[in-house]
Each structure stands twice: as structure tokens, then as C-alpha cells.
Length: 336
Image (tube, rainbow, N blue to C red; front, top):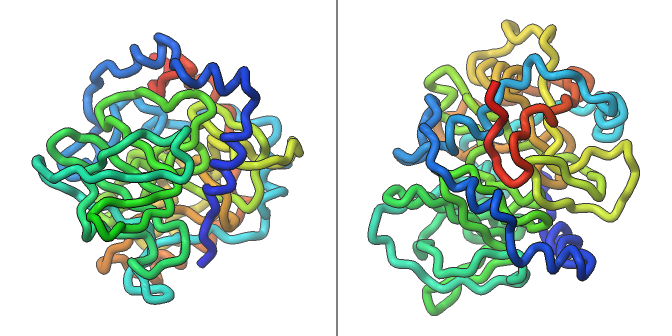
């Protein structure tokens, strides 16, 4: 199972020009105004909290958006014959759970200090991360080691990349970010998060509860092996030094072609494929071709998830989602 490398993304982000770096220190007023409270979406919540506001880009219907003029080049660069793979499931892989887990903590969870290797683009602690928080790949993982924590009382999402517990009860990490699940506020332009694109990870994960309910109401996180030195809304950060226009930028939205027959897929894969048609995929990190992200769960049927391999890169297309943007510093989509 190939793991991605957001550390490289953080290095690129920190190498911004002095002018750009100065612009990052004070987000514009529009970013601050994007904290207005929005109704919760109708989908399965995150521990009782909204999985981002209902008008967030995560929930946008992209099935009717125009095809991106660079779609063919993007698909070709990632791999038209490469198969879609669920990078999550039941059981263990290399001794650890398969997928990116979410830890839910109740009100009153003590906050602990967190030190960051890339502190300049990380939200300062303390974070309410318990000592036994679930780590991507397990406690002995040498991969991305994401730690995602949802505070069910505050509906705040705390995400760490390359997270390791410290003997004093705190944590050290490569980078970290805090998101308000009730807000459409984006990170400052140019900033990474625990993910290369500067976006939250948890809202884009496929969760078993959603598939069991029969519908996923949001876009899905996907990785590509090489990306462009560019990001497009709603992403905030790039993770490459290449200016090749054939490579996808961070934040690129893709979808499964309308003509793909999902009826031949088993139920778990079919629910995911239908979400790929309506809400699409969002390029969020460098990694293996067409790996989609989800949470580990013993209720997954790995054989059903493997059926997603019937979908190849050539069955996907990039879309032009620029018409959705209402404000470059807000995750909210334009009212229609």
C-alpha cells in the first residue's frame, strides 16, 4: 500500500517568495467573514457534528459541470489504464488498520502540547489528542501516520501529519491544522494542512456508516503520483516543483463518467461509485494513482471494495468547478 508524502508539500509551501509569505500572515477580511454558521448537510454526521456545512464545496453536485479542457491530459498523466483502488477496508495491512481512522473525543478531553516540524504553516496547540488516539497504519507505522480527532462538543476537527506520541503525554508532528466543522473558512492561501492540498482530510473520507445508509453526500479524497506546482480552489497549497500543465493541480475535481454502468458493482462499491458521479473526487495529495481514501472498519467487505477496480482512469474526467466558487477565501459554493 503506497503512502503519500505531504512533508514534501510542506517544504514546497515554506519555499514561497517573501512577498507571498508576507501575504499569508494576515488572511483577508473575506476569509474571516467565511466563519458564518451554515445549516448542516443531510448526510451521516461526524460523531454528531456536521461533516462541513451544507453549502460547502464538499457537498456540491458536479454531475452537470462542464468537462475541464485539460481533462484528457490530466487523466493521461495519472494513468488511464490504472484502476481505482479503495485505500481502506477491514482487517490489517502490514500489521496496521487499512485506511485513515478518526478518533472522537467528548467535551472536556484534556488538550496537550503539540510540536511541529513545519510550525510556520501549522495551527498552534494545544490539541485534544488522547494518548491512545488512532494512528493511520497503526502505532508502529512508518507511513503518513495521520491522526484525525473530532471534538464532539465543539465540532472542531484536529488533524496531524506524521504524528508521534511523546513521553510527556504530548505529540510531535510534521504539520497540523484545526478546522471548524460548522464553518466554511479556508486556511490562509499557500498554507498546507495535514494534507498536501491544505484541505481537511476527514470530510473526504469514505465511512462505512455512509455506505450502510446507502448514500455518500460529499466528494472523496483521491491521490495522484505526480501533481503540478499549482493549486485551484478550494485547495490552498501545492505539492510539486513541476510546471508541466499536463499534471493535475491540487484541488482538481474529477468525476466518474455518467455513462459508467454502476449496476454491475456490488452494493458497497456501487454506493461509492454513485458518489463519484455526483460529488466526484478531489485531488488532495501525492500518492498512488486513483487511490481513494476512507476509514478502516471491520464491517467493510474487502471483496466488494476491490470491485472498484472495474473503474479505470479512462472512466474518469476532470471538471471545471470554477463556477462553484463564491469567494476564493471561503469553502462555500455559489448560490444558484
